[in-house]
Structures are given as structure tokens and as C-alpha cells.
Amino acid sequence: MYDLNKHYQSNKKEILQSIDKILNKGVLEMGEEVEKFEENFSKYCGVKYSVTVSSGSMGILLALKALNLKGNDEVMTVANSDIPTSHAISLAGAKIKWIDVCEETFNIDTKLLDKSINKKSKVILPVHLFGNPAEMLKIQLIAKKNNLLVIEDACLATGAEYNKKKIGSLSDLCVFSTNPGKVLDGIGSGGIITTNNKKLFITLKKLRDYGRRSRPSKWPVKSDLIGYNSKMSSINAAILNIRLKYLDSYIEKRNQNALMYMDLLDSKKIKFQKVLDNSKSAWRNFTIRVKNRNQIYSELYDKNFKVALGYLPINYKDGCYKKLGKNINLKTTEIISSEIINLPCHQYMSKKEIFKISKNILSLV
Ligand SMILES: Cc1ncc(COP(=O)(O)O)c(C=O)c1O
Image (cartoon, rainbow, N blue to C red; front, side, top):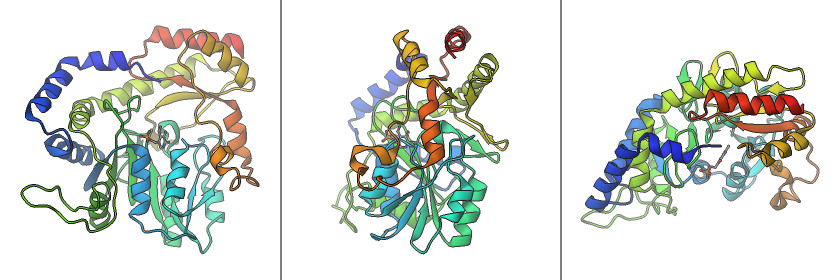
């Protein structure tokens, strides 16, 4: 969903200079650039702490691990996310409760979420699907009322806003992916978790580095808890530091692209993902809903348009959840998933490209 070459070309000199500096210095893991990225990202999100990790998937897993969940604890999430959202819950040893989504926003249906709380409920894990913020005010109210924690999956929503605040500052923990192709991306797998909770921050720092509170220097550092190797490379962080400076301009361009799509694709046969009035989407991609999806998708794909079917299959229909997902049928999730096509919406799209793909879609619906 990205033009990685144009992305590279747009800051090539700055990127190459920083890679050269890092390779000359010889600190390739963690170090100054990683600390700088954590600081810069905290400032950007308006949050106290950030912890870089090796991917968004690991970020969700470590966020859940930091909460010390027990085997019967339930984590409520959606089934139309990338599969690592559900996997992280399983890997953390908790139970998944998939909640249906809202027909218009494609995000967790807060009315159904409210009704589904029981004694086992511990965490709400909303996903800002395709960069579109979920109803965080309602989610926080439900969490507060029931003494639950909230971890946001913002892997596609870097730079998105809710109630004039950046996503990342609204809940207990918020997880972003910085994988190539994400709204803010580096040159390899990566992610970052934000929080205002100092205790969780310290636990996360330990979890990503074999349980160590700080990096060993002159003297070894003991492991306080059993942890992972989920560190970020210095080169990745340096590139993220460069691109973070331009993130708001990426978001603006993506929003302009989305408006152009809405204008050009204005048809009774095409539905769009609704962005709440108090939100700004990061538009990881522009998603349309059409009835004859497979045929339209196939024709666009064959004409080399950069379209995608994300995220299919629905999480509970995946092979690994065969047993668990057997009697689950979330009506709206199923309908939306059978109708969506993701269109490219990145900052390097030209008006001509948006016009061409839109014209092709209109001729097919
Ligand atoms: C919604 C969502 N959650 C989690 C992830 C996992 O992120 P990563 O690829 O960095 O592991 C992705 C990746 O695309 C995603 O889209």
C-alpha cells in the first residue's frame, strides 16, 4: 500500500548520512537514536513515556504481558484486525472475546462491548482499523465503570487524532507498528508503545530486554523478570526520527487523498469507512465497500492497481482458531469483510493516480 522507493527518495540524503554516522559509530542496537526516538515520539503523542519494540505484534504481546493476565482473564477485541492482535492475547495466556464491529466505522461496537462485560473481563483492546480512531470516549467510560484496562492497537494509526489529541495519549497503553509500509515507518520490523503509567513503562522496558531494567555498560545488569529480545535497531530508529518530522504532512496529504476519493467515488453502490466527527484518520489506506467485491478487486489487481484485501480471513476463521472460532458468527464483521477493498492512500499518490483508480472502480460497480 506504499511506494517505498518514492518514500526513500524523499529523504535519501538525510537517511544515508544518518546510516553512515551510525555505522561509523558502531552502536547498532538501541543507543542514542533509539532513546531520541522514544523521546520524540512521546512529545509527538503528548504522553509521558514510550518504549520501542521489535514490531507492533511484539508491542501488543508485551503490553498484555505487562498486565500479568491469568488464564481465565478475558481480553475484548475485534476479529477484523491483522491476526497478530488476536495472537498476542493467546500468547499472553488470556482468553479472547471477539466483539462485533460498528457497520459504519468498522471499529469495535461500543454498545455490544458494554453488554459483553462479565466477571472475567480484564482488558479492552480496540483496534483503530486502517488508521481510523475507535470511539475512545465510550471505551474509556466502559473501562472506568468496570475497572478494566485499555490497550489500543494503533498499529495503523500513527498520527491519527481523537478529540484534538494524538492517538497514543488516551489509554493505559497504546501500541504502534513502524514496519515498512506503515504510516510512520522505518527500514525494518519495529514498533513503539506509549503510556503515562510509570510502573507499566518500567515493566515494558524490562520485558523487551530479557527482563533487564537498563542496558549493561561497565557492569552486567540482572534480569528482574523473564523477558524477550524485542529491541529496536539504531538505524531503524534514526530513520524514524527523520520521518517523524514529516508525519503531520503525511497525514494531511492522506486526508486530502481520502477527500478526493470520496468526491470521485460518490455512488450509491460504494460505501466508505466513516470517520467520527471528533477524529482524524491516518488513512493507512482508503477502504471502500462494494457488493461484487471479488470481481472488482480481481479486475483492479489484474490491472496492476495496488489494491489489497485486508484483513482476511476474519481472525476467528483463521486455521489456528478453528476450535475456538467454531460457533462464533459476528454478523457485521462478516458482512464488512466480504465487501471491503483497500485502496492506496499514501502521501506519494498523485491526483492522476487517484483519478485513474477511481474511474476504473466506477466502471466496475
Ligand atoms: C491492526 C494491526 N495490528 C497489529 C499489527 C502488527 O504489526 P507488525 O507488523 O509491526 O508486527 C498490524 C500490522 O500490520 C496491524 O495492521
